Image (cartoon, rainbow, N blue to C red):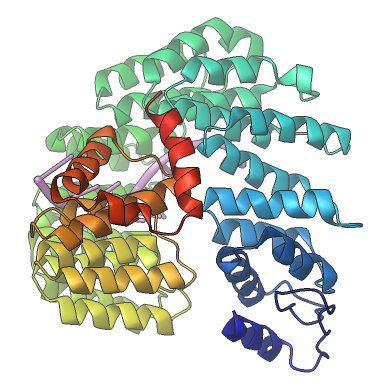
Length: 496
DNA sequence: ATAGGGTTAG
């Protein structure tokens, strides 16, 4: 807590420190005038995470003169993304207690997203109504968020229902929002449902090329390339003209379905027809050929694009580096990585993650760690995916302590573990058959549930069985008493 | 945040 405070004051050392009121127990952040830098959001997020007393947290966030802005609030909510309950606690704390600050529509959207992800639909609708009473009209984005969460929770009909009732919430449906709901369904692989819905309403919304592209892409995602073709045929019959995006969708569809020669022929056709193929087209082909092990051809296409004057993007490099890692050698992948640097490209977290995964796969954990450090030096620090890769491979190699060490590191910093992290760690706690590992698994299970993540039933049963068999259940129950209450409450819901 | 290209293990 005090190290946090010193970080806060070092951020704004020129501003005087406001002394806490005599009765407060929690240190108060110093006076801030422009506290909306990413660092400030991270510091405040950590303050919220580490606080155990809601009242003193309220004091800290309200008594100080933090200059609350929508951007700062949004950034804090993003930091707390993988700790939904804390994120909502913070949002409500400002909503109900701050004398002057009012949340923006964007912050409301974040809060609604988090509440919906926790499947707390009552809270979602309360927030929706609160938005309206504050005269912040819910936007089409708000409904897209709710629909997406409904679909993810296996309730696509609820998603359609909320879309159709948008106007009752003061937001009218148009072609944009129609396309959005179609995309939400398709991305969640509910293409059949999207297609039926589309056929009923395409006349009313005057479906355009984008609508058809969305549906075609959906069919491609579930590897039904023929269905995509049929859909596009229908589109042309309706007098709509395909765009380059349409062709790129189909091209990707062939490769994804493993129809590599169809994809290749289609690519040649695109070139012959003189439709201006772009960087996306080339990236699709490089990746598509590469994953099928056609490294030479992939490399050739990459060279060809440069000759044709189409500039590769970071995504193109990422595709090439990935397929080299998988089907060629990490060393060749790394030389492409270095080549990309020398040409002035700035690698992103995907680039690093691809390289790191390649190294891990070749059991070169130390080198992988070095690339993790390089990420820190660049602007993009290691993200959840980076940690998950490293932890997974450490555990896989039997280096459980190192995996746990990395977990502790992320848990105390500003990169919170997600559902994958917990699943990876918990399942590794059963390999050594040590009773202490089972205890750790139990703690992880409590922690994940406390943060709003739902364990799979199998995970839950394995952990409980393990604890009961080794007699560790009692000692687990002494692990902090507050989370356990929350834990049992949630478990009742979980077990119905 | 209206459509297309890079991260995911088994």
